[in-house]
Amino acid sequence: MGKAIAIVNQKGGVGKTTSAINLAAAIGHYGYKTLLVDADPQGNATSGLGINKRDVSESTYDMIVSGVKAESIIKKTDYANLDVLPSNMNLAGAELELVDIEKREARIKNALAPIKEKYDFIIIDCPPSLGLLTVNILCAVDSVIVPIQCEYYALEGLSQLMNTIRQVKRLYNPLIELEGVLLTMYDGRLNLTQQVVGEVKRFFPQKVYATVIPRNVRLSEAPSFGQPVYYYDKSSKGSIAYDEFTKEFLKKNNRRPKEK
View 1: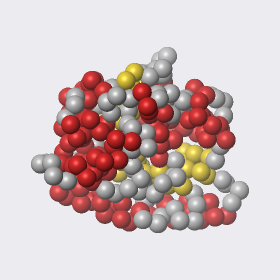
View 2: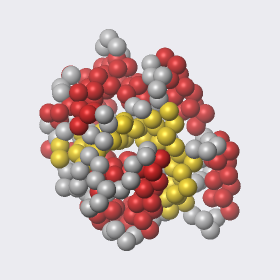
View 3: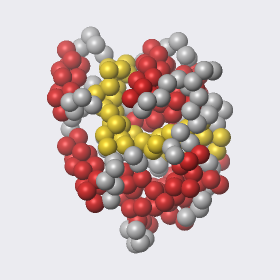
């Protein structure tokens, strides 16, 4: 049975989609069958894996709202052991349509249940909001990873996010846990960065990954070529950082990189 993990932060621009793409690709590279679910209407995780959003006939929207089977929507990627459940702008209307659906909070959970055993890990890229779509995702996953940028407003809104996770745990998904907190856009030369790291570690004791993700041009370039950074430029600082993060993630899940 695969483990489902949401990459979630209601703030935009924190490296959420970048982290979802590169964690999923690196897990696949290390031999574990992985599914990346793009649940953001912007569809950046889809295009970041080289899939044209305009060519996506059925997406996560159809799975959530219309009940189309996930298996028929999943696309294989060009990358080892990595499949994607693509998204497009249709998903933007899903929250309104979910309002009147019975047991709306369980739509994603029920849709992914039949395919969970086919994957070792299911990584879900969440939209930058705490609306019904994100709540739906939180009901479907085993844990969450929270990317936090090393900038001035890093902790703004995080108490609201954690309250939402606690409410979901109490009402719908008693098994959900905080997998960890990933520091992104790290620049060790700045005093502000060190202050933010200290604050985040106080806010999330024992939950902050040792690996930090630096600001890196290659990380910014890779999506425009439809490639995870590991495949775009394996020797870049961004690629090395996500490789180390993935190893740390696998170790915490009692897994080790398989022989390639």
